[in-house]
Length: 327
Ligand SMILES: NC(=O)c1ccc[n+]([C@@H]2O[C@H](COP(=O)([O-])OP(=O)(O)OC[C@H]3O[C@@H](n4cnc5c(N)ncnc54)[C@H](OP(=O)(O)O)[C@@H]3O)[C@@H](O)[C@H]2O)c1
Image (cartoon, rainbow, N blue to C red; front, side):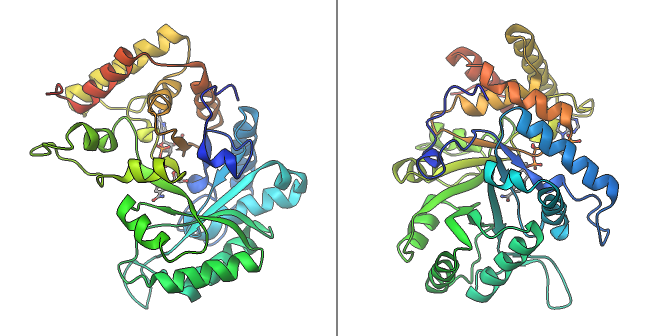
């Protein structure tokens, strides 16, 4: 895809995995509908085609996306185009349960739920195996031995190739890993030019007072030292700097969008390419997950590999997005 800076930890186990990941959360149509429509299937084909056209071969799901319909509509696409399965990597997540008659929205890392959830994802996607299964959000009631049992059973049955996590700190990963027979290969975290706490955490490591940091200390370092692929969700900041109406946003947000637009002009690329290039310039070797289902925006994201921001350009965006200068 022309993304030159690929030295991704994930490539050691999934050769040729693309640096950009297509996030499938917006596929499947209306979250409230019981089934997807023919139009939703058409949109899914168009989005997947746009992703493939820019070299994306890595697709991120979760059992809960569109209440299962994101995986189902993707499965419909695969049914019509079975040759695609061997050309792509499929990742899904489990562990979140929506509010229902049994209780409020909650997390469940029990062996039973992890295994049942994977079964559901495989059925909806119509595939035999997930390349990666991630635990979606830390479950405070987790029994790590049960997670190990679930992973062992899933691996032995050939249902999951590799395991990862999402929204976990380095310390939580280290604890869980000590019980597991397989290495955790990925951690998906909210990271973007807007949600830049992953950078602040390092900058203000010894003097965090007043810095409003929302990222667990040591997470990047743990992942870096243990070959854990960091994936960023919310990578496009939902369009905050790339064309969404931000007339009601604070001045520093609008100024940041102007800087993104100016850099896009300088490099001759899209604004999406600039916000993704900002993530790609970070030495953590981030794999940005993009959540747009709009084919034009997906194509725009594909230009990210054409940009290598200078130190000054990178800092200029960071400082602007912070809304205040660095100490
Ligand atoms: N692990 C987790 O806890 C977690 C949480 C959330 C998401 N995720 C994953 O990460 C992926 C990306 O996350 P995300 O969707 O939150 O983030 P995102 O990529 O930052 O934002 C995508 C959303 O922003 C909209 N958008 C983008 N540019 C826009 C613009 N210029 N104007 C108006 N709207 C614009 C898109 O709409 P269009 O489709 O119309 O372009 C889409 O709804 C998801 O698909 C999912 O796979 C993971």
